[in-house]
Length: 263
Image (cartoon, rainbow, N blue to C red; front, side, top):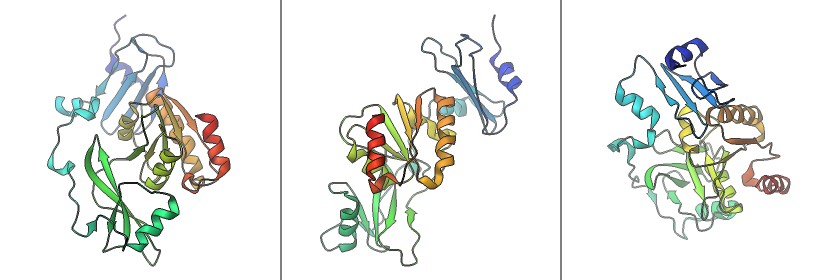
């Protein structure tokens, strides 16, 4: 029977940001079909290997907008996606003592980092497919400063991997945690969401992985479970919610042991 996918999706009556997972109306695959409402669009996907059911339904979108939703990685580059270092962000030298102490504290030796001489921040470059698209800086003291500062407006994530990617990604909150995790476990990709918000648009960053570990800070345990459910429902990937004793950048032995068991 030929299924009208638009009518099927409308029958689900999905609310904003609400996810559905169930049997595919096309191939009848059991629990392989996901759908989500994102604004005016309904995004759907069957992750069964021999089913090509995937798309976006929205009466308010142009063909170009639909294509961008389906294949965000194919979006042509534009000027707003490039990033140029401000003159006050420089390559660190031995005279930048705050930078040196920060590197030592977190074991970030050998990392390609910059230094904000005006604000006293260690700056992490953000790359997208090898292209510099932004940066985020962490203050080296708490003297009335905001802890983190973004130097761009690009809504993207930060990733770090040491060596060849293993296909496992660990979602954390900040760039220090992502870097520390990558250095502790070569092959593991540390993915920092730069806060505690993981939206539908971030799902594209999980395309090249087969296993996802969600390991937010202990005070965001409820979001760890929430994101596990959402990622599983939307991508079909094996997803593990890891309850940490402390942020992974503190290298608590019990947390490292948990990760070793999973990996």
